[in-house]
Amino acid sequence: MCTAATYKTKDFYFGRTLDYEISYGDEVVITPRQFPITFRNGVELKEHNAIIGMACVMDDFPLYYDAANEKGLAMAGLNFVGNACYNDDIDGRENVAQFELILWILAQCDSVAQARQRLERINITKQQFKSGLPAAQLHWIIADKDEAITVEAMEDGLKIWDNPVGVLTNNPPFDKQMFNLNNYIGLSPRDPENKFSDKLGLNMYSRGMGALGLPGDLSSQSRFVRVAFVKMNSVSGDGENESVNQFFHILGSVDQQRGCDYVNGDKLEITIYTSCCNTAKGIYYYTTYDNHQISAVDMHKEDLDSAELIRYDVIKTEQINYQNGKGE
Image 1 (cartoon, rainbow, N blue to C red):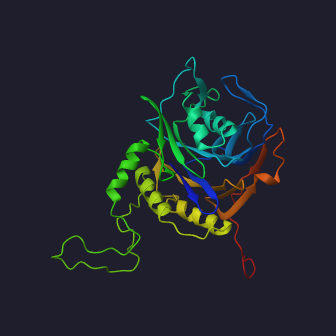
Image 2: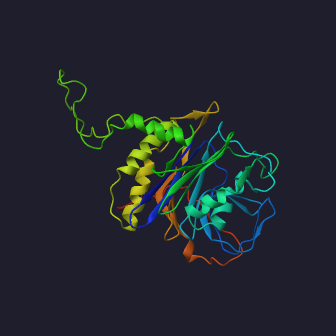
Image 3: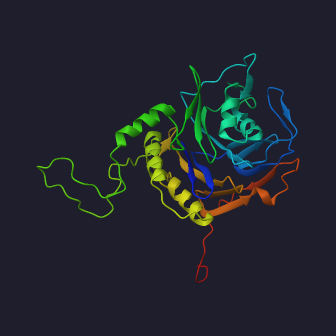
């Protein structure tokens, strides 16, 4: 499963964890302004916003997991298995396949407000990218420096939810995730006080009892609460290094370690990568399960008027800084 979050200091940051049991060949991919995009509904874009993010490239088409465009709009798709519902084409609507929705929005919209208007005309279709590759069951978070929304295509229609916490995980649907936060209204980063009963002498027995009651399991509902709490109470300086470092700590609160979550029998789900994009500067930072050193790709150091995808292999080998010489 996965978790996405936003964070704002002097600049606006957006990123996610991708938690899964296998990788599909992830790359940091820049889609320049003049890379020709042909959507399945026949729309062709010869010029559009430049985009950077993590993607799997198939047939020279970037299938983005998460990305941001040069105008500061960001978007990610997360698993929404059992609730996502797509349609056949509908006359009079902008029919967009689920696998191209991130590209459709980021290529053409400069803000959440524009994306919201575009979504009002969209029908998300169940068309497959290719035979043997079924449509992924997803929902999406779209955010800029001013606001965030969650988009869910369900059996009873397309839902566009305001997202005041700037966080998204998986199931249940977003409105239920938000309602569940009411159960944690008493959470505080401060030391707890005895409110259980004035007839009992209950006391703190340790340091570090702030956030007592914060759920610690890997379920999507618990991860939503945990990241929302950590993000909403997060403190950092507003410099680039401080902000990026703090963002990785926010998502580090839901990191999935190998051996803690078996899926599909004997497969192990892990945090394959964690990302953080400074949407103002167009810098995409990431770590991987086997490399905790932060790597970065700056889209503005590339030719954004190119007509070809710009692709960077993900660095997966741990980068260790030996301060007194490398050991044997």
